Length: 244
Image (cartoon, rainbow, N blue to C red; front, side):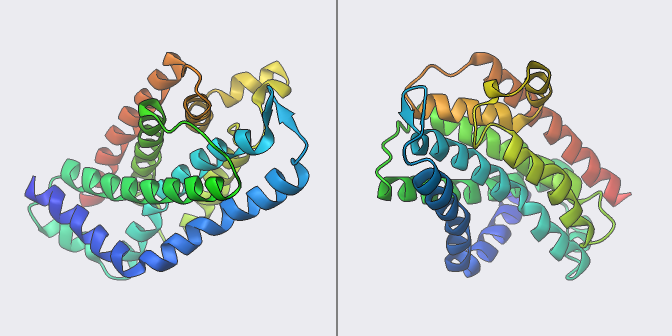
């Protein structure tokens, strides 16, 4: 338990030093998307009887929680390749599970901050949504999934430069194809089936349903939970592999 707390507190100390810059960075992309897609282009567009901004805001929360959770991978690689922090952790009595959970929880704090930023921006644009238990559960599960994936992949890359490739080939396509900006039922059926394999698709569906006061789909919760468990096991495995 003490090892997990030590890993988590280290990340929190780093976050505290960068908090103002981090919050500013978290606000830029959602603000631009709301101004361009939601306010300018989608000002008169309705989806299922709701304004496009009401449709877009939960998608931005899903996307923001994904990117902020996965960004823990970049910090791990900086600490690993430039400051050799991971080598010190290897020498310390810190189990692989404690290390992974500490990093994931640090990622979840970023997810919370990013979600609150988007909620605040939505309030400024007059978007009123429901932030109930199912909403926060979906956000937390989404953050857990991508923080665990970030830890797993961070310890597989061979250089810090490779990290950008992971973002370009995994995170960016998912951000645009995971149901964040448009309803997936407008796509061909074969494309819908493929995109249901993406964790973000289920996260966006759950977050949007909860935020709009609808009943979330239990199957999407199951899929996110399964992905969280899978990536947790993968992250623990890659930490052990990196130590060998």
